[in-house]
Image (cartoon, rainbow, N blue to C red; front, side, top):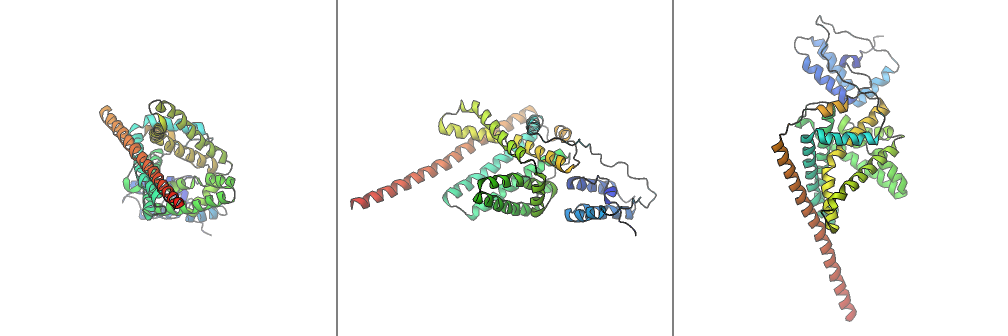
Length: 377
């Protein structure tokens, strides 16, 4: 019996490699192998990616590998073997640590200022989109407008996460690779399915709802990172979080504590209820990149520990990544712009709630006046 070729050997990746690494390996081999190589060699590379690049096909192939030994096929031409393959500096299996994740997040905040400022501005854009959602929800619940703007906000968040993963993997950032229609559809379906599961958990008992939300949290990142479908993301998220729910909960709790502590100096400048609201907005948006960096690092470490996946050295790649260079003048301009946008956002968002509260008060007084008139009559 002739066994199938070793597709992992053809793409020159480890059998535990992530979908992201497999895609990068295929792209590099395709780019580095031109007309001087045999047609059979290129055919093998394409065939290998057709199998390993699709999660379902790869699962079936891995199941076959567990019962068979693939042939180790050499390329059937006289050209020398490929030696300029992409080298991945693989980190040892990490221990999942909340402290390490936030340490990494704050270091990235400082060492990648251009990327950090871009993420703050994208987060602000998501915030601006949330204003009409908030107003629409307060005034007209369940509006179609709210749904579409929510989807747009989710797309922007997916772009933010994809940007960070590209930096982790030392990949060139291309706009057309940051988002796709398929990813958007997968995210929407996952939002719906996970939301239903978590809601059911809260309906029956509060504790199951909390547990479900923790176990399904990585699913969104799995869709963005590994291009998994919503069902596969649900299954894998449920699997990789086994035994780590406490650390996932602690990760969110620590972020809340960090925000609360850093709000203290801001509250010295902003007094009263409005001051508290303004301070929350300023600290929340400024720290948003720290949370994104830390969450992505925490998620990749979780995969590394639970699946023994081989990723490039995230810290080396991320800290040394050549993003847009900013001189002191452009950096200062960007900071001033962000502060101005933060002030505008705080002002308009405060107006939304103020108008809503005033309208509620007016409606209450109107109803009270009518009820009093009825009593007098």
